Length: 293
Image (cartoon, rainbow, N blue to C red):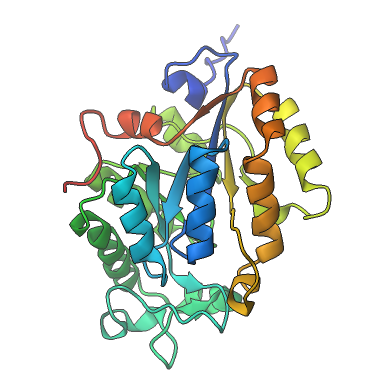
């Protein structure tokens, strides 16, 4: 009679939690996109239930975001690897310069828009992608900040098979964790002892704005044992056309829930452990503290 192989441990167990622990990362994506986003992200972490953030280096408010992070060394943050811009009104250029990454840019030397993702994935040369991602990581390193992880803007785990591999390579090289949430790579990494999400990944842009608070509460009440992650997108403001173009309704609804007493109360009632990516980084890169200053 054959004996079934034991199941791979949950990522929460790899982090040292018991098998029945319900562990959650609430990560604020898009830090650096706009000053209204920066303000909301800081508040969601310092006053709300969020535990970490991800910085978009090519964006216009990235420098202000890095200044905020330097004044708040307790905030855990990663790098939101960015190869697209959210719309025609956002004039984000590559950090490495258009001349050095020609397969990633349009005729104006700007990153392609989210609507052009299929074109980007078809034409992007891996060497250009690596050059741009290294430029984004290096800019953060030169600022003296110490990120904890790498994750992607818009492109999920990278959008095509070679990009997640590159992400993991860069993460291991720099002593960082990586957000990996699609199979089969997720299962493979967990089987190798690297913590990644155990369950379906929640992106707040996939939730309707109407009734969002109730959906968040339901998600918390039904959170399974293991490691889960939410990618949330808080912002305040919304009075200008540029802010509205950032998906203001989604972002304002995220900010309202993250900073609400109800959110904190439900987490406490359910006994959910909210962590940040530093816990994952310690397993992905033991003995490191992120990028060298």
